[in-house]
Image (cartoon, rainbow, N blue to C red; front, side, top):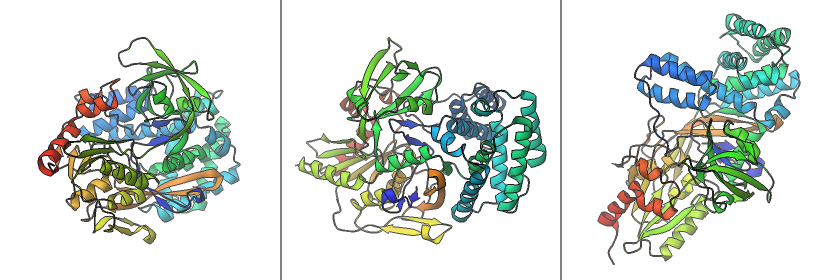
Length: 556
């Protein structure tokens, strides 16, 4: 979850967000390494720990950071105490972050163009904000040590070396890496002044051997230091901060797709937004984009492809698409337009005779409560007497939106509470009786239901207000705050944890549904099926219908 003081949002906001990281690019929604595609086949983990480590290192050697991360994460579930697997995951995540920075135009234009003095001012602002607001205390030593580690790995990263060290002898790079390990690794630092002294020494060392710019070094300390925090906290470039606000607003100019890079195959389309330019252009979930405006994107990162997709409203982009069956490619010409990301893209009656309605909620945004009011009014007019509320795959959003939509279904009592290190992070939110819908509810959840979705699941479970069906939720129960800082950059920090009405928190645990339904791989792989066909074949929805038909629905 996040809070922000950015004036364009008019007020302080708090929102929830998973390690599934949904990027609201100007043009496309693009998932990062944390996204788990519900239609993907499970990763096959080697039989032994040594085999698992070797396979992960193979992905690293070929610079397939996303696959390495997914592999190590799966391996850790089997061998949670293996330090080599843990560090492999850490390395892959750091390299992935470096790659993202060096394919981000705003990073090079704003951050790399600073003077050493300007960079240190920004460094101090970041560190001060972390030490005063992060949910757990953090020492200067830890922050700086993680920056040293990031620089050490950056010196072996292709994107970094291409940008800064293309004419430098490899032996000199190895020398600097060795000195970093021998002299600066986990070196004690007691103050900001001490941090400056250490980083200045590293800047001088890097220039002496590599002619490396100061800002390239200091940037690794700014970004890398945040690796000492949790997975939901990070320093944001101007572009990433803008993406985050676009997601909050639920509006951007683009084609309306959610995609994931698959090296060698292109951009896998995880989702195509309803009524988006992409949907109108015949683009389907499950397709791979193999070229964008005749530029091959099979070996691009998600961010590189997203940059090609950018463009002004009204302009056209030509996508070459390959379907899952591997047949001939086809071309889609899509006109970029303003896309409104709806919180409730599907609102319909599923069983008219028994009055069972269905709503699909994909995010918690500023407009979610008003969208829900309109949806419920429409369904009530169509005879709704019970409701299936689907938050599967919903990564979260605004805390305020979660509270508002819950308040439509609970008459009284606590909805959620938050507790942090700073007193202004301690809040309790309660239901209000007016306007409450008392209809029977089924809530659908899965392994990608996170944060604000889990607030809903936790409250409805604790108040025994709904039957929760599906699979265990993701397990992200923390609050992030967004702090805009100098240079149009930002800091996203975990500042609190949230708790269900009964005082439970399920971080890294998740909520177990009352009724578990096994994941239906065949249904999720229905390439080319219509929305109605997918809904009709959905095992979770079928189970919800059975529950409501048998226990809740009133026969006329």
